Length: 527
Ligand code: NAD
Image (cartoon, rainbow, N blue to C red; front, side, top):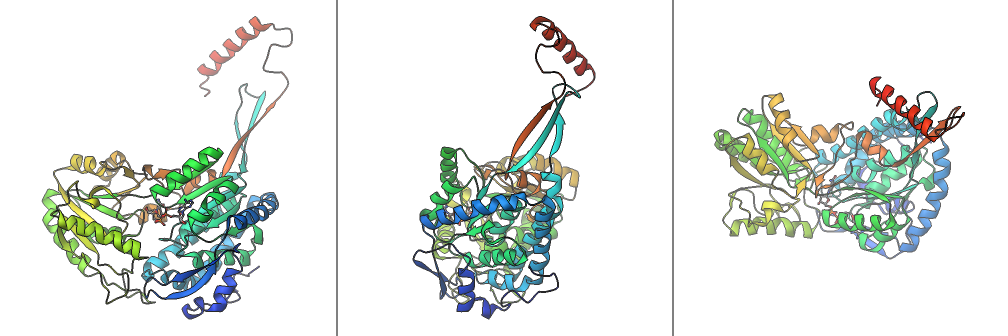
C-alpha cells in the first residue's frame, strides 16, 4: 500500500512515459482481455499511439467470477475501512495530478478540461469517503406497534456493479460512480469507452496501489457491441453513461434480467439570460457552459434564450469572448479548447452546422474546421436564426455549437427551455437569486445552475445529478448516488405479543383494539 507521502513509487509521471510501450504493457496487465488487439489513436495527430488487447465475452465471464469471489471479502470489511481507502486514494490522485492530466490530454483535451476531471474524481472520493457511514449504516425505522415492533433498515450491496463509461470524460465518468459503488461494498466491472481506456486503467492501478484487493475492480476493454451484453448479463446492477440510444438498449436488457440500472444520457441544455442579468458575467459564463471540453459534455449548453432588451449587447459580448478562445492542446494552460475525439464527432458537428447554414441560419462566429491545428479541431460556433426544421434545433450536437434566441420574458424563456425531449441541465442568469430559483423550479431538468453553467452542481458532490425525460434514469452524486448501489433490507423484530389475536382476544376484539390503537396514534401525530 502506498504511504501518503510516497508520490513516486507508482510508475512514470511524464507525458512521454505515459505513451511508452512499457507503460502500455503495465496498464494492459490490469485488463481481463484475451481478444484481438485494438489500436489507440491520438485525436490530435491521428497517429497510432499503441494498442491494447480487447476482451471477449468469455473474458467478461472470467472477470465476473473473480469479482464475485472478491466481493464477499470486500463487503465484510467495515464501512470505515472501505471509506479510508477512498480518502487515501484522494491524496494519491492529487499527488499524481499532472500524470493523470497528461493522460487525459492525450484524448485531445485542453489542459483545464483535463484538470477538472482529476479534481472531480478527488472531490467524489472525499465526499463518499466522508459520508459513506451516514448513508450506509443500518437505521432504525418506525414499527407497526410502538415499542413492540422494532424495524432495522439495512443497506446491502448489490454484488457486482457493471460500469459502462463514455469517452468524453474518460476519467471521472469511468471512476467516480465506481467509487460510490465500491465504498458501498460492491465489486466493479468497468468497461471504459474503447477510445479512452488508458486513463481509467491508470486510476484502477492507483486504487490497487492504495490497497484495493486486485480482483474487486475488473476492467474489460472493447466495443460495447462485443462485450456490452455479456457485461450486463454478469452484473447485479448497471451504471451507464452515454447516449440516449445506447441507454435504451441497456435499460431493455436490464429489464429482461430484472436488475436495476442508472442511465446518465444526453442533453440539449438550455441557458436563460433574464433581463436583469450582468451581461459580462453571463457572456463569460455562456462561453464556459457552451465550449468546455469542446462542447463534448453532457451538461454543456446548446441553446441560449436571452431577454430581448439584452439580446444585442449579450450577443456582441458572447461573440467577442468566443472569438478570443485559444484552440490547442499543448501540455500547458495556454489553450482553452482542445479537439474533437474522432471523425464521427467531426462529421456530426460539421453536418449540424452545414444543415443549419443551408436552411438559413446565420453563423455569427466559427463554423469551420481548423486543420492547421490538428486532425479534429473545430472552431467554437454560435448560430442565430435556428428554426425547428434544422437538425441542431432539437438534436444533441455534442460539440462546440450553440444557438442563440431572443425571448420576450421569463415565461417564454421557460416554455422554450422545456420544449425538448431532453432534461439534463439548465442554467439561469439573473442578479436576483430568488427570481433565479423561482425560474429554476419551472425548468424540467435534473440540475439547474444559477449564475453558472454546470460547474456548481457538477462540482457539488452533495447535489444529485441526472436527467429528466430522455436524459436518463437515476442520479449520481449525493445520497441517491450511493443508495442506488445497495438493496434496502427491512428487518422487523416483534417483541412480546404477536400482531394477531392473542392473550384471549378473538378476531373481533383484536380488530376493535387495533382500531382504537390506530385512532390514538393518529391523534398522537404518528406517521
Ligand atoms: P455511446 O452510448 O455510444 O457509448 C457509451 C458507452 O457505451 C461506451 O463505453 C460504449 O462502448 C458503450 N456501448 C455502446 N453500445 C453498447 C451496447 N450495445 N451495450 C453496452 N454498451 C455499449 O455514447 P458516446 O458517444 O460515447 O458518449 C456521448 C453521449 O454520452 C452523449 O449523448 C452525452 O450527452 C452522453 N453523456 C452523458 C453524461 C451524463 O452524465 N448524463 C455524461 C457524459 C456523456
